[in-house]
Each structure stands twice: as structure tokens, then as C-alpha cells.
Picture 1: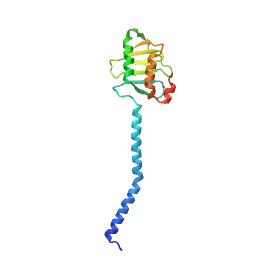
Picture 2: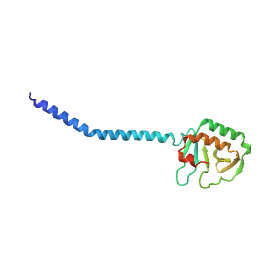
Picture 3: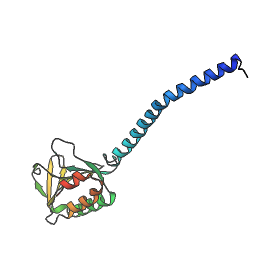
Picture 4: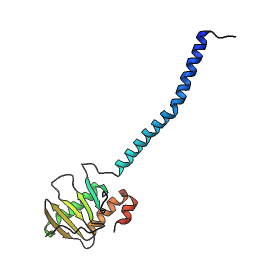
Length: 165
């Protein structure tokens, strides 16, 4: 049985389209893989990236020459921390800016609203910072340090956790 010119045209055209599609398949698969990788990377970086502006941001003040990690403090921990410190406001003493040695310098808690002070929580003290004024509350038991540490540790990379006191 012989084919007509129209049949041959259809076979040749279909074969050309299939060949072209087969050549494009690796490129399409590569683009799909890149899109998937970009999506996964974006999701991974926002999970432990900077906290949303509506939450209390905690910066682990640890590194020199590299960006310090930043995570969100849970609402419960933030309420407990600021509630306790508000109740002890009279115990805060005027202080110089805390020392800045190499290594861990504390957790810096940055509230989402200006009505609250920025806090620097170290192992033995809490510094309240408003503008240029620093006030210090001694915390020899490390209660406030442990409160913040316990709340943020699950969100920190292993190398950061290992460097914390």
C-alpha cells in the first residue's frame, strides 16, 4: 500500500514535531528543576530568616564580620519577658552601654512597636535601651537569658547553638 503526498507530509511533519519536542524536553525539565529549587530555597530562607515586622525580633549578637542570625521571639515569651521587666522597672539602674567583647554579646530583643524598649539580654543582666539611654537590671540567676534562649534555640542553626554559652 502506498502513501499519498498528503500522508507523507503528515508523517514528516509529525516526526519533525516529535523530534523537536524530544530535543526541548531536557531544557524544559531543567527549567522545571530550577523553578522547583528556587521555590524550595525561598521557603527555606523565610522559615529561619528575619521575623515578620509584627513580631519581636531577636538578634543573636555573636559574630564579627558575618551577619548575626535573627529569629522571632514567640508572643508568649515576649509577654512574659516584658511583663516581668515592666513589674521590675524601679530596679533598673542607669548604666553605660554594655561591653562589646568578641564572641557572644547577648540577645537583642527588638519590639515591633516603639512603646517598648529594645532589650539586650545577657547571661547575668538585662539592658533596656531607649534612644541613647541604657538601664541595667542585674539577673544573676540568668532567668531572662534562659527564657529567651529556650524560646529561640529551636530556630537557630547548629553552629550558632554550639557557640552560645
